Image (cartoon, rainbow, N blue to C red; front, side):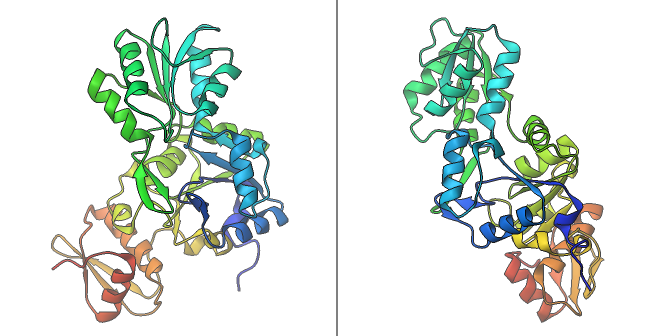
Length: 336
């Protein structure tokens, strides 16, 4: 029998939620999320929203969440724009000019730490780059000139894609790649997968044991590993079951699940490892999977991750129709 003390959420005092791909897709909330968050608050668990998207101010993010029936305040939102502004404030003189490649809200964060946001390269000692749908060649050109002249370059984040209601679209990392090509330089990265966002969000809640929750192995989960906190990967956004099987140690989640409702399930059933009803054997360059019990394909995925991470083998060959069906539900192509 499962009790409230057994469920995953009960083991942590704050939930650090990613937004894009975890709570919503663009303007569309992911079904069930609002109910899960209300349940966490009712149980006394703190909630924080930790996002790499630097295009909107915390207050605007909070407004969006309230419009999705998720009660929150700006104080519960931590963005990569805030993290980038802190990096700049720590590294350049107060009052210095900073070229902003990003939204007006990023300009506001730069100004809030005592620096002067500008859009032209002349006299700038730093460049900060964050996601903005209006970024164009003229913005990138000014950043290019400043970086080539020796300016410090800070990227809010380097997510190559951004989950939306229309599908995956170019993220800030794609725009950062343009300037990497044009300058040969590498930016300082302020957001995930670096640790500061996780630490500041946890501290703001007065918490000691956070659980980081997200949809991307290369940012949300890698950032949790860097920060030394446990993590839950939900398969509602960017990363796929195939990505999980091939995940390197620095990108492996503590738990994995289909969606956020898993926070109300037993923690012991969500961790990658051997699973009742599934047998995984290591064959010749393939994992041999047999289904004998549970029909839950995510149990199969947890068992496969356990063996794949130990053996380095990511190909899977089903040994029966039940397993082949489960692999199909996971979007995994059986090996020939």
